[in-house]
Image: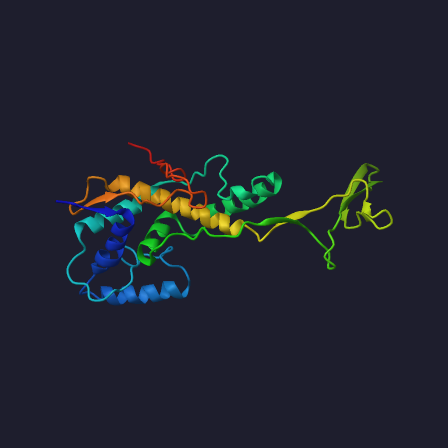
Length: 266
């Protein structure tokens, strides 16, 4: 009779207990230890490194025998994540606390989207990393405050856009624009006409947003792997993780939303 097992525990079993057996008797454990030290030293756990058929895994002691067939199926399912494409949904914002600052929110979200799209950790890397290290991507972060840019004295800076019209060497009219920081009228103690301020988030929420995006990718990836393995394992009956989709919002999980299956069927 199959045993029920949570997907996170199944991944840990596969990558920590079974797959390190690959290459046993041929220096496999030694190579795993050496590769693990190298990766750990560069702070790139399981990213773009694959020293044996099943990926880099740490040496947890003597490993006799071959990996369990279920572990190999788990690894194959994880590798299927490479066939998916990232698709952050319209209106994606894992930090709703800043949504009211629409203009500035869009700037940091665009930066976070770019960071996620160009991150070195692919979904398969995130899954392997946390299978071995445990836990999940860290989503904690301080809610930032929107603050105005200030001068050295701590006074808000008021900017002005200067415009100058002139003629170029061909006698054609040209317009030159430049920004100054003299938009405050010291005499009236008020900003000059047309003056404006600039604002920034403190602390910068970009890294927290990227981390929360990685969490959503990782969580979607777990759900995908569960579906890939359903009914295919000999020893285990895998069940989904009970982790929420957005722990920062305390919402119920509604299924994968950032890793749609875009593989084309033959």
